[in-house]
Image (cartoon, rainbow, N blue to C red; front, top):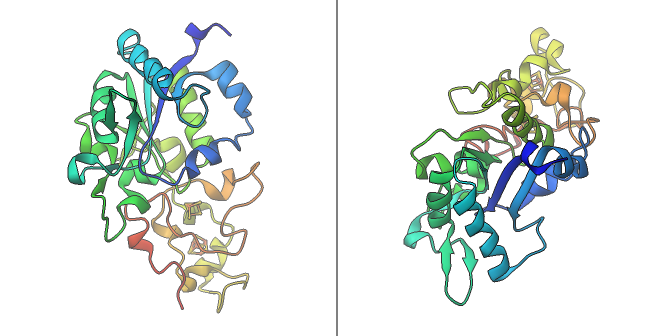
Length: 265
Ligand code: SF4
Ligand code: F3S
């Protein structure tokens, strides 16, 4: 496919565990190779690119220079702002040291769209959990512009690939009041949960492993926007409740502190 027909993407990794890019590698409709072949022109990504050091930095500089207003900036991870952002450095060469905070500010101003992938980038997530020693904040607190928040810990590959496909084919998807594409986050987990009939009948699990509704075990599906019950995970075969574990609200703004403890003792 001609590169001009693809979405140019610069993908920065900041404070996170790397779980989101690993999850994205599990994409099946389309497969990762198809994403790179047909959907996006991935200009920069410290996970997926071969170039390192000054060569990689040169790619980043070229994208900023030649594709301003065209590239989509994907940010994976929260942005630490304490001590001038020194807790996350994304570029180090003999001449340069650029923190995540500086890179997000630099590239965030030049991008056509900014996509926060995962709950750390979207809302702070685990990186900003108490006591948040690095002063990590969501991307939207650093940039004074609309950020598309594709939350999840990790993100479901469909949510991310689907958002990029939407940007390529139709432009920005409709977003909820937290900046998340309604397409994926518009309904609660609870709404379509396969154990919903138990909830409605007031029949609850007495312990983990029971087949009834796990609201009694701390399930936060009723306040979690995500389509896990019907989209599912890992080749679309299972999801937390089907695997006998409560929804811990991994897509929410409050995760993880607001869901802790994950299981009712
Ligand atoms: Fe709702 Fe959770 Fe019960 Fe499913 S298990 S019906 S999401 S409370
Ligand atoms: Fe996350 Fe709950 Fe889905 S924990 S994976 S939003 S079922």
